[in-house]
Length: 489
Ligand code: UD1
Ligand code: CA
Image (tube, rainbow, N blue to C red; front, side):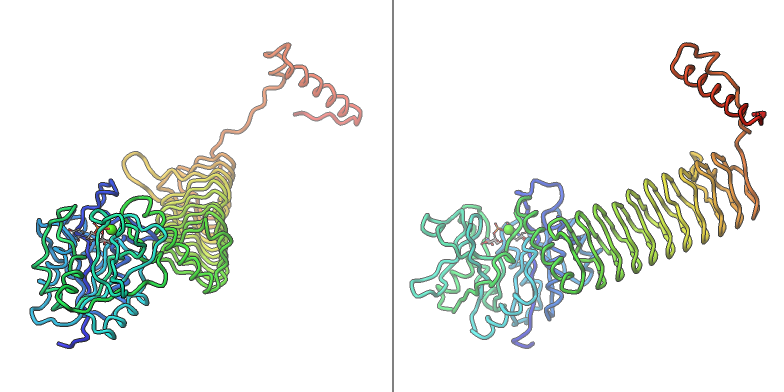
């Protein structure tokens, strides 16, 4: 095996007590991926012959996440002895016995480090020939991190955890990022010799540095050019800070790719989203999961799209969409709710206070106002009048409504599914459509209107309504009489 081989060990076996969560720490999400998912995604961009993830706490949840999303990583079990040193010991034992390359150790809770910083760390390690190289950082507030202790001449001598540090050591601002490169042989030599005699009763990986140095092996530290990338997530405060840094990075990436983002601070874009040049994103917008947006589309303000596909030049304002496909040139909102398997055709419209689900709305068809459209197929050139409701559920099963091309419906219709409206048909206002409507027919279901003349004056005597009704009736009579053409109403 070659000296320049790389194995990557990702630590994900810790308890994550400070999160105070029923979800394992490394499975908390930022930017649409779990913390450990970010680390694995970065690791996969480096050329490694082995990628191992060490698990123990909440083992089942972590393992099922890994097998579902990252089936190619090797899972290594840590035993009951706690600590990062024990985790790496298990990982090294799981490597082939003759593996003698480098071992890059990454923390499952340090999600922002990018492959360039890591590649530079590996290159520095190989160039110096050190037995171990630590990625360190200078932080204005080093609280909680291990400190990198250097000799008077600047060489690294050891790492001390905050909980074990003297006042002088705690004052050091150079921290251990929890990321290192080791010669595999150096780990094999030192890890079995580490004890648990420290404030946390754990086998500290950080003790490897002091042991190597004491044995006369060269150890080094590379200071990360951007300290923010080394930030670890131990509690919910750090989770939100790291999420913000990641989001700023994603927004900046898309801005450089030609996307207009009016307000980066209130625009949240998952790492898994794809945007085309000349997309415009207005404030308070969340683009999540596998959402893709084509060129010229305008999204927002106040819009959330998750797993949606948005066509060219579509305009989506104040909407919430999940697993929906929005055609080119279509418009959505303001105030629209697109539930899974909504497909809006080219140039179509889902307007104001409209909810859709499992429905295909054809090209140029419009559902403009106050409607619920579920389990429905709508042809092309259709207009549903305001207040259209598809009654798709009869308490037992869901049924479909089929609406043909060029159908125009009256306001406030109920379509009691299963029901089919033929092409070009029309419906009257307030119709309750229970039977199929043939193509080209006009469907009316409301009883003819009957006016009871003088009802208010007779039954509401003395009210203001009766008074104005009386005045209006006399004025109308005079006007009609004046023209000499009184009609029978
Ligand atoms: C660790 C470092 C500290 C460094 C910091 C950077 C040690 C002893 N300390 O501290 O110097 O500044 O990271 O973020 O290494 N884990 C296991 N098995 C375990 C314990 C932890 O796999 O038995 C994993 C955790 O899941 C986590 C990572 O190792 O992904 C770090 O563990 P954590 O307990 O967060 O260490 P820190 O106290 O942050
Ligand atoms: Ca940590």
